[in-house]
Length: 256
Image (cartoon, rainbow, N blue to C red; front, side, top):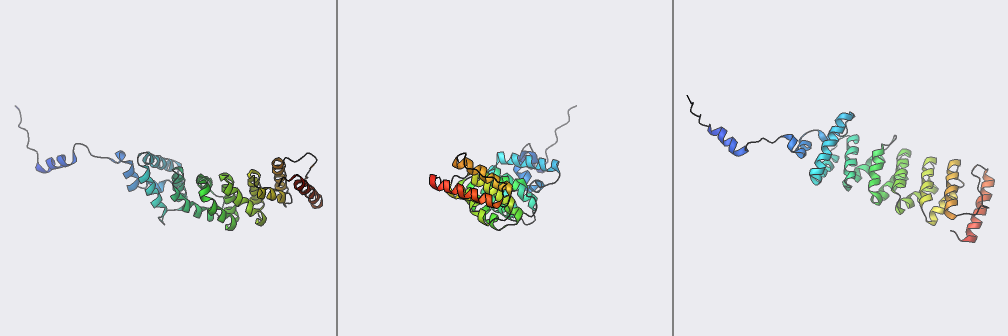
């Protein structure tokens, strides 16, 4: 005996016609996933597993919809509720996409450094090269000692002429030995005469380590003859005499 087919109910039929045979899930729309969940805040999680999963989902959406995803991330930076750790990771993601909207937040984070700075700040800033030299140079001039140290490291990493110039111009005013060391490292890579003058000034630096690097860099830069010597460990009078001899040779050979 064959039972007759039941007539479809009008409401069910309407739903089938409107929705089709499949129901969309969150997995089919990664962009909706990060927009409607806590995925973005979770990139700052202290739990490595949670953070890793959140980052994987963010980078998946970047592949599928880079512009919209970057817009969502940039908008999150303006949320006052979001903590600095999360903002830093977001900036790192935006920097990986060379999105300059990360720069203002990165500069703010750099300027507020009061403990050993996260490497992500420095790496993310360095990604933008010459575009951030002016802002980083301002931190080098007026930030805390740790912020200025981080700023000097960023300028040294960028290694463009503007960055070298910002470092070199700071040397006469700088009191922190570690920062003077980084400035001298930058001067060693700078072919300008101003950098050479800073290296000569570095021969009279209060720290022996700084005097040593200044002499080594200057010796390579000017290709000094073997008769010119400088003893970084000698007393002030001996060092001044050696620097005087060096300047006399530089003037006669027109190296500077």
